[in-house]
Image 1 (cartoon, rainbow, N blue to C red):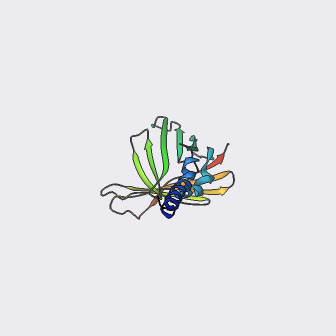
Image 2 (image 1 turned 90 degrees about the horizontal axis):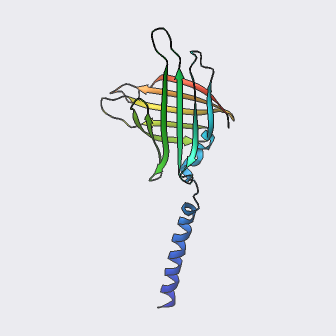
Image 3 (image 1 turned 60 degrees about the vertical axis):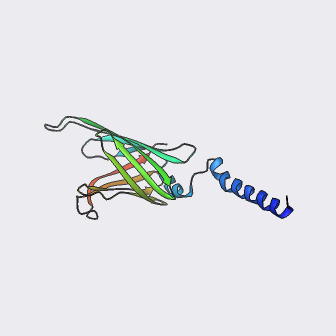
Length: 173
């Protein structure tokens, strides 16, 4: 084999090896890095209606995804019985875009695109005809406190978001 051709082949193999070495070591994809402020176990605080709840954001699959588990307990009021809500969300990178898939105990499935920057993460659902659109926002209020907001846009008005829920949470660990 010609020496120049051999060097090019070896160089190509080394280039591929170094390009993949981050993935082999399990390094978190750069697009997930701005979401690091969410990692941890959180407890909801200050709910005036007596609801309790909490959530955890945890890196999984060798730091390739972030999994959020969430629960809330709402006490009985008037003629409304007490209830519990559970959900799961998986945040991942696909083709360089941060996405999240949400599933809950009421049968909802929401697909989000995520805009993450240090101290803020905005999850916006895809537009579907004749269905509401959702926006979930987390903002770091202080190193141990998060503010959360869930907004809903009515069917046919995908940018007309209105507040639905808001909360504050403190980091437990």
